[in-house]
Length: 280
Image (cartoon, rainbow, N blue to C red; front, side, top):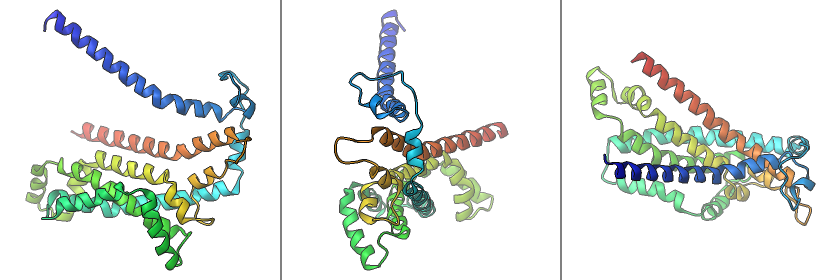
């Protein structure tokens, strides 16, 4: 490589890294600023000059965590989202494997239909579902939310899992058949372990989507089954005295479960791949 080509390559690499750094900062700075504001008094937050040095306080977190509605909303979110993600994975992964390995005549149409469920605006889905749950006398219940969220996670898991299963080498599955594995054994003992990294990413993505879902939960609940995003939105007040510190603390608490789940799954994946590498 000539000196001019090397120089051009180094400049391009430097610009690419600079763009990545700027993109990372644009995503990270708002989160850090929200985190700082969650420890500020309202006077420090609404100050004309941003304050980077202040006396931290835990009053915002104490206020949020001491509310009974927050505890109930957290319980509802954990039960509803956890059940929906498990149901979506149990139903979606076998469906994705079947579409990837046993293509039907309408396989592409099925994939497009599954993806089209994400095209619809939430209000277009929530209004018919609200009528259905009202007629079934299941409105404002966890069961209604679990079924609704399962539809959302199911479409996400299927769409993201199909490429993961297609990437599994067919030769490995054929070797499993030679060893006497049946279709179910190949799915559980061969395909799932090989595609685990991408599949867990799909499940985690589905979890984040339904955990942060707001509009559908707002229209399908009133009091008993309200999830944490709905409760967090109710902490705001109309008028000039907006409790910014409380709102920032609510945002941080609302963001912790997805971050913890992604961290736990990442640790699990790293440990699993390390064991496989050591065994090899």
